[in-house]
Amino acid sequence: MAPTWIANLLQSAFLLLSWVRGPQTDLEIFSSSSCLRTAATLEALVTCLDRFTVPHAYYDSMTYDLAQPVGTQREDWMSAIQALLSADGNCALTSIPLSLQGLYTVEPFQEYCVLYETASRCGTYLKGWGFFITPSSHRRVWRNIHISAPHPAYDLGTVQQAAAVFEATGARSLLVPGRKRTAFLSNSECIVPTSPKQDYYRTDPAHNDHQELGGCPSSSCAFLQFHGKGASTCPGDDIFLSSGLGNSTASQSWYTDPTDRPVKRLHQNLQHFLPSSWKISMPRAANTRTVTGEFVHAEQASTARRKEWYGAWVRAVEESFEVVCDAGLEEVAEEVKTPCLRPTTCVLRDTTGMNSEG
Image 1 (cartoon, rainbow, N blue to C red):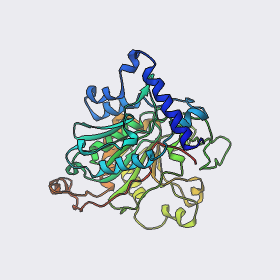
Image 2 (cartoon, rainbow, N blue to C red):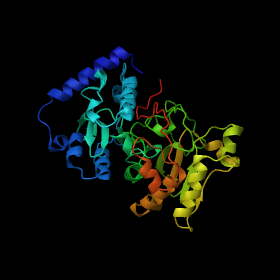
Image 3 (cartoon, rainbow, N blue to C red):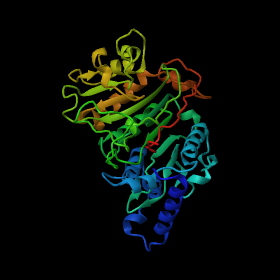
Image 4 (spheres, rainbow, N blue to C red):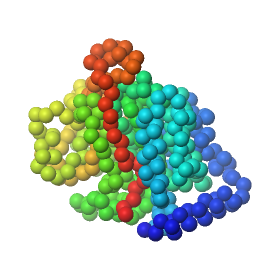
């Protein structure tokens, strides 16, 4: 990777050329910021923002390096996210760090705050680090669940599905990367494929060692990723759940020991709310050696991603995680007949689309 000062210089030159290149095309005039003005619903908003996702094979080594964060940008991105998670009632109070100004902004959308990239060229995000949405008021946070759809433009329908579940369950946050997982066809060094048919690319945030998580109680907090799967992957399953654990004996036993865990509760509730003919599976201890990462993953066939099943997913997630309450939310707990807990801190660290090794 190029030294920081070279990357900074090239980035500045690239931005300057973008600014002075001449009149915008009609496609460029329709910018990501227009999504917040035209979208009528949260699902429509994420659909619009997703249109700017960096497409397949877009990068080479040089352009990938140019799109990576430099200097304090990665830390400043995380600071902006933590500020949004702490915001209560006014999105405008969340300031954008200097290193991100001109690239990102925070704006209100209905009852939410949206951190999103404003810089684009020819209908494609300039950086592709993703967008982040959180309720603008703590009164709207009913469950400490952080939801993401890590493969936009690839696992079709998962961005809209994640947004629907986020909104309906009163989840804590929604994160969607801004790059297709195949945007840079260079193999990741973070995960070694277990078969010749597997490819893990550097722009695949679900297979990246920078995606660390902080601790939170499993009864009321989770990091849930919505994925899609092809017909040849786990072909007998409609939904395949995993906790993204490592290969140790202790990790493998998560699926078989008697301890109550988020993935087990979600598995049980999905079986209850989705058709009984569907096969909803978890790894057995014998085959968890291929499970990697940190999140609760939901690999889904195309049928399970259809809008008609959003309601079942919402019910399953609601039943799997306890309600947490801020001031005034006791009525929510009463409505869903669930004990009201005080909020806990779910530390969301590097869960961005800033995929980089080195």
